[in-house]
Length: 149
Figure 1 (cartoon, rainbow, N blue to C red):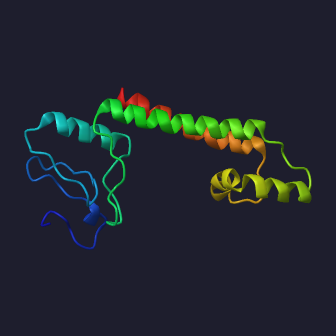
Figure 2 (cartoon, one colour):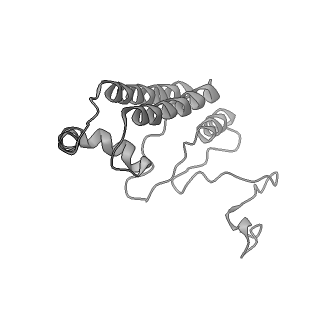
């Protein structure tokens, strides 16, 4: 901890004792591989490059952490498929035109609407807004997959 200057922005920055470069915050649940295990360190680097780390509240651990490059890709492909299904929902949804239809729509589709409305922070969501939201998620996942490959 002697390389962290108290009271400054750098309080969150820690340096490697070996090379002096900044280290990544992998989370409290991170267990460091042995120094000479290059394969595991490369995998940790791949995880970090796509935003996967070992953060949790401590109750049940960090959740699923893929243990190989293939598993990372499989994990992201699964997420992408879920996002594409969400796009299908928004493409096939009949957009409500009045208050009564909106209420029926909410009763029937509250779960799907909630995924987007939390981010849009609005009561009425047009189908195109839902499609755009999930398309952006697909782009983000594809970007992460391309980083891994």
